[in-house]
Image 1: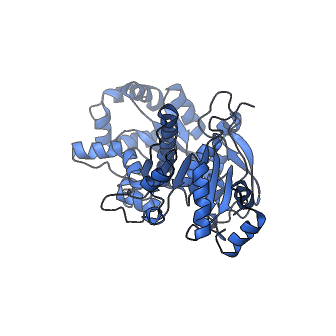
Image 2: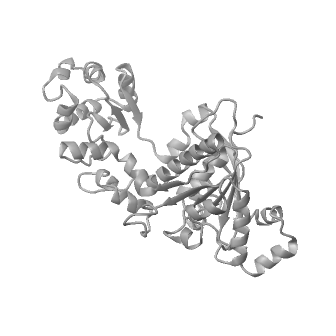
Image 3: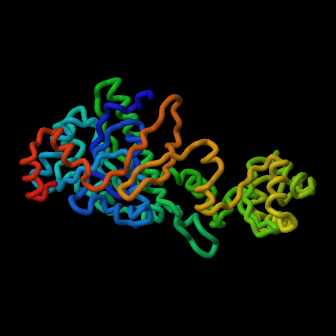
Length: 394
């Protein structure tokens, strides 16, 4: 088997919840050794979110495969000593503690750079380490609200959050790419740059299109449920057999083909209410009435066949269970088995496929599973490890 790209890289992570664990799991997928520091006893509080996966949390199983779990109370002298020894051997340190906690523990990027010049430090926070909101706690839904995402999502009558943790996921992705960039630069220049990522700024980047649209048009995109706020027709329609089919028109060529092949009225393409996208958005209700009437004449299979014939992109509105059994995932051999403390589970391969490289898909650890082995590696004898446990440091 080919070696993994990040083999030989050691990551120490004071991580919890979603953003930092997502970043470090992706590093582990590529072969990095990730030592996850957890609280003695309960560990990462995300372990307790639910018990849905063989008694384990769905979030934790998703985010923590291929890691080593070391329990440490870093507020104790013994715990801090262990952490300092780990950082002396590490390439990357990641933390997403509560606001200001890292600095109070002398784990800020500047202090760590002085003690460990080759260490890449990645801080993940809610609103940044500086600025007027540096002290504020931030969770995914709060950041969705602060960035305006929730104001764009839902029906005209009611706003809604996005159904997955997009602020955390965005921050985890930018932390991951930032760390990779810093590793690349360190290799080229021997300079270790710190990486700072906030949930707010990560999701702000994803708000680019509606932010520009609002700032320069003077109008915020409307909440239109599963339809597209600024493109039409683009969204769900109910076929005669009550199956929901979504379609997406991206350009005028597709619109003309849709009118001719699917709607059976080529003249609609030039109708002044619908002759360009902005006009179709302005007359969305009239357009939806026409499209919905046509869908009501067709079962889903016939509708999809016509849309395919017109070369108009379309999909079914799948449930999560239907997605889980999706033929693309099985047909492309994307599933692997991963061991968890409660049993084996299916896990998807990472989305980026590197030619000739099989990603690491090792077990999800139980709390403190690797504490003794990591401590022995740092030079602690059994008696010293027992002393750390007696002091509550491990």
